[in-house]
Length: 127
Image (cartoon, rainbow, N blue to C red):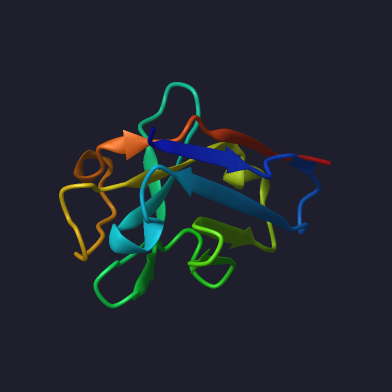
């Protein structure tokens, strides 16, 4: 059974760090593009980062570039999002997603590319 399970969300002070995990089961995560997105109530889902499955190139939105680092551990079948220098505006529910139609393909920063999503994990940045 396919599952994506995010974890690692927490309450953190501005300037702090968190590492989110996206553990996959039921498929090999390395074969598919992975997207990281976030959403606050009343707003559209926003792209954070994505990882190609073709060449493992990683892309970031301008709002997180230089502060967030996406990666994946093939042996653990898990993707990660390391978030540093967190700001209050980073507060959101964070989701990982995969595009099962793009086997060994390229990722994108639009939510509609992805067809399978995890349940999300809450990140709150506040003093």
